[in-house]
Length: 271
Image (cartoon, rainbow, N blue to C red; front, side, top):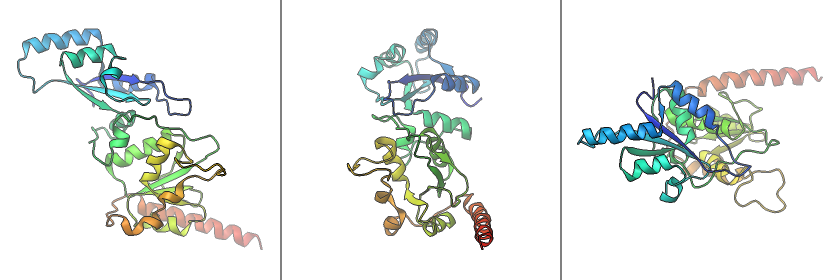
């Protein structure tokens, strides 16, 4: 099993009503189904016994603390979880603070995601809650250029905030999130710019923290979001050299051609 021999704990600060509230029950079930254990007083006692018997601390077990709701790993916040506080104070095992997205990504990919500078926001606890989209947003999002655990994490995040994720890019998508300013999806996104916002991943990170309308929402702003700040066509000259290994980029074009055929057929039927 993926989590065999691994210890887990869940720490949830009460998030605001507009925030994503991950299910404690579902995460606990997923951890147990994949061979993990939830920390308890019994396990803490076993860790104490092992600590006395094993002089070498290099092979200490890791306890993965899954945190959300604006949690930061401070002494004050650890006080909310007395067992974790005991583990830390007695140095019984290593504490690694992760997010629910890290957990979901690990289970989906069946391997432990590496936390990098590009995935820190998604994989580590943030001092702010992920905000949900309003029901009227109806965002339909595709992505391109992302691979591995980063791609999986983005998909999990898109779904968590209440948007719809699509593998393929079609004319009824509302957004395309690009890693680089290149690739078939990117080109089509710009071509269909009247209906699709082609944005960088920073747009997603921004609305996670500030909501769909963004940090600088103007008083007269109604239903328009903050996409203009993150459009790829404005940032293209600053983007990385194209390194698009996205497996679904070609498949998207096949879907797009089908869309175009339908559009053409419907337009002919009007005359």
